[in-house]
Length: 256
Image (cartoon, rainbow, N blue to C red; front, side):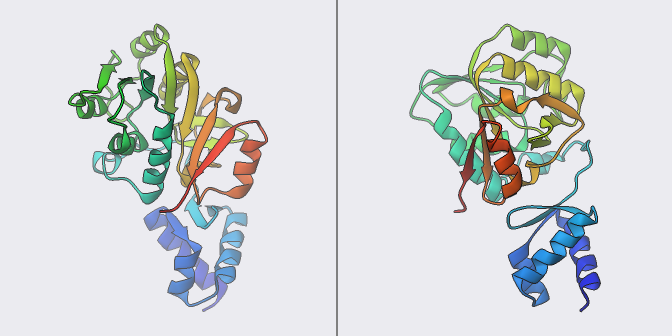
């Protein structure tokens, strides 16, 4: 098989799955991992994909349509679960924390500590519903117009957030990069999360590998306003180094 044919098949697979891994492609096409890496590098140079540590992801648009709830509120990928497990180490007794309504936040619920008391502020009806039966967690939901795909992010919700003070905010977004900071699909969501960051003593970004190095439509915060980035082992090394050089603490969740 010629390289061009193989790359065309890789691209078809990438469009279907959203991400591919060099090791799996090498086994599928019966070639070396180095050959696949050269394919992915060539495809990246042609603007077809974005390389990651162990493979590649599809180049995203600067805006993303709302995710199907069956995907958003699911068990999550192995990368999301690894990031979530690492994130809970930043929840201490007596804390007041923010958890949004993104898929990574839903995964985080599985690992929330039950041996200490703390408070959760959320702008998601789904998250609030899941937390209401946790006796050790006091839950507050942000008031405002309900908007399912982003949670409650209207001006009323933003003004409500301004009246609060938080210990830790677990933020996420469509993408995070050294150049563009943390970014989101909509200005409304970006403004709301920016306000959450402003009222929080510590901001922690949860971003699995396919978000790292990606830039979305509306900037949420500059990286200088972020304290910690938690990502996973597939995140692109070059982008991680660029983020570290800006003084951001980066934690890499390990593969199980």
